[in-house]
Amino acid sequence: MVGKSTGGPMVEVSGLSGAAIRQYAESVFNVPEYRSIRATIDSGVKVDRFVELLGGRIMIDDTPRARLSVATRGDFVIRIPASSHPLYQRQLIAHELGHYFLHYLYPRRQGQLEACFTGTPEPAEIEANRYAMSLLVPTEDYRQASRDARKALEARASWNLVGSPPTPSDINYLAAIYLQVPFHMVEGILQLFPDMGGVDEV
Image (cartoon, rainbow, N blue to C red):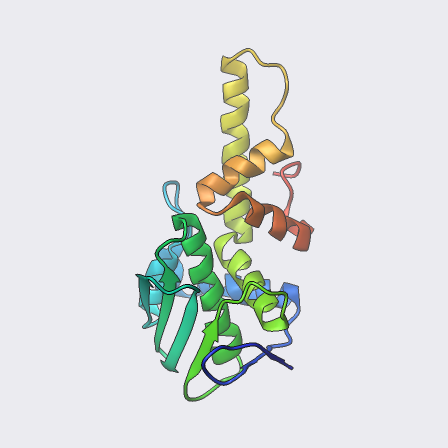
């Protein structure tokens, strides 16, 4: 099965399940040289650093759509529209990394690859989106961000003498800020993978 690729060979779908894509994406955090990209209290997952460690480059310019250009393993360029919001730029970088891992490294592909973000529900795009969500909202980091968000919101409620506890949406909204991702990404990954542990469990 293939997905659309503009300006180059067609992108072959990996065929991995959503759970397998999540496991594949999160496995990078167990590799010693990539542990430095993990989210911290003042930073989400460092996708720009990850690209650098992989041998790639990021170009933020006047391109109308995000694009991945692979020359060979460890030599690739991700182009991102300068007009995009910084949070969305992070999402697009992670999406193109999804193409690199799932549609180039995983199938042990050789030679060049060109992939362009289409924003359409094609199989290859869905896979890249799931990889991006799993990379930017890894299970352990989400659970920690949720715990921190709940504590902060409960403290604010007590300071303001507000009796209502924070809602799950309140907690996930603040967790998204901590992780530096759009709120819809946190909601989306929890719908795909409810076993990550919702805010009622953290």
